[in-house]
Every structure is written in C-alpha cells, then in structure tokens.
Amino acid sequence: MSKSIDHIGIAVESIDKARRFYEALGLEVTAIEEVPQEGVRVALIPAGASRIELLEATSADSPIAKFLQRRGEGLHHLCFATDDLGSDDRTLRREGAVLLREQPTRGAEGCWVQFVHPKSAAGVLIELSERPREPTGEPT
Image (cartoon, rainbow, N blue to C red; front, top):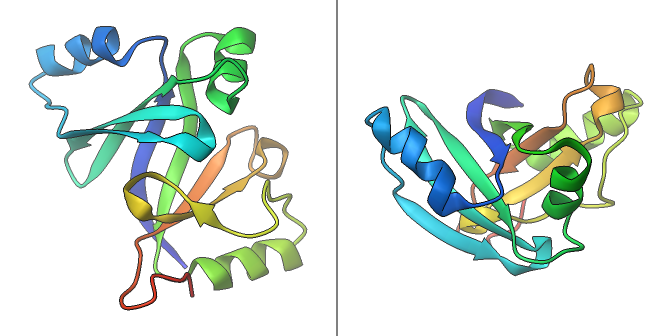
C-alpha cells in the first residue's frame, strides 16, 4: 500500500522560469526528462524526503496543456509511493474509486503509475507510483 508522499506535481508554463523560484529557496533541479506518451517535460527537485515535480506541456493536446488552459499554473497532483501498485489498483477499484487508466503505465524515471480521479479523492488528482522492479520491471 502507499507509504509516503513521493512528490507534488506542479503544472507550469515554463520549467526554466519556474525553477528559479525553487532555486532561490536553496533547492536544486537534479534531473529534467521528457515523458513523450504524456506530452510532458518533468523537472525533479528533491525537497526533504519527497520531491517537487515541475510539469511543462510539450504538446498543445497533453493533459498538462489542458490543465494550464483551464486553471493556469499551480498544484496539479499529489503522488504517493507504493511498493504494490497492482494491489492498490485492485483495492481502489473494489472500493469504487474512479481510476483514469485501465492499467498502470510508465511515467517519469520509468516508474509504473496510476491516477485516481479527483472526484474520488476530495477534489485532488492522486498519482500512485511504484519504482520498477528487476528483472522484468513489471508492476506487482
């Protein structure tokens, strides 16, 4: 089951512009990667035991681009780390939660991810993330 907050996702128009604020706080962007299947560029900023993820759209029809059009920059999602995404997925479905994908998919850093619709989580988009396992890398 979910153990801790993995990261907080923040939708931004520009990673280059937004990162300056976090760097002024003494935090450091440690990696930037593109997740093509999601149409997003991600900047990872460690913050204590968790991280901040700055999310920049790479295409006009990506979920982040649509979010920015509707709401502007700001909090996009809260992500919980899990060591058993498959079990969490099944439990949430059984409890009636609305999940956004039929099955977990790959996200940043090769993690397996699943999203819970905000209407199932008091108005907050929730992401569950499991680090890939060796040797197959398949979620549990």
